[in-house]
Image (cartoon, rainbow, N blue to C red):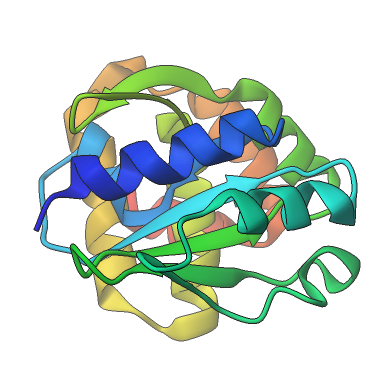
Length: 181
């Protein structure tokens, strides 16, 4: 099951629809840290209007892609998913949240290559902070292991000042201290 086929099709369609985007979640933590298995890709999107999402959905090959209910996604800033019925990969499209951290995180995204596909991806620091938020909400040990993996792999290059500032703002200071130290 080819991630590159799914990722290439979704990223290309987002680009043609004019929707800024970035990879996040487990794909981002695997990019920076230790690889782990996953069958989904989290893509944060920042459409300017609901019509941009409609253009994206309408441009997808609907015989190949199942599209979850996206009718309220833009207005409610809720995620929806796209499933590639050929490869089995699920892409969670997460509408960028309207808060200072999410705007900063999105502005800091960087270029990378995943499965041979040029993409934008969240920075290691932002990947850590987002995973700490998910860990707090879900009580997931997997999220904390991902954070540790990224922190170990990036090491001294991590922007600790940035991490401390936003961890305080996001209410994940204790988790950051426990996991990253």
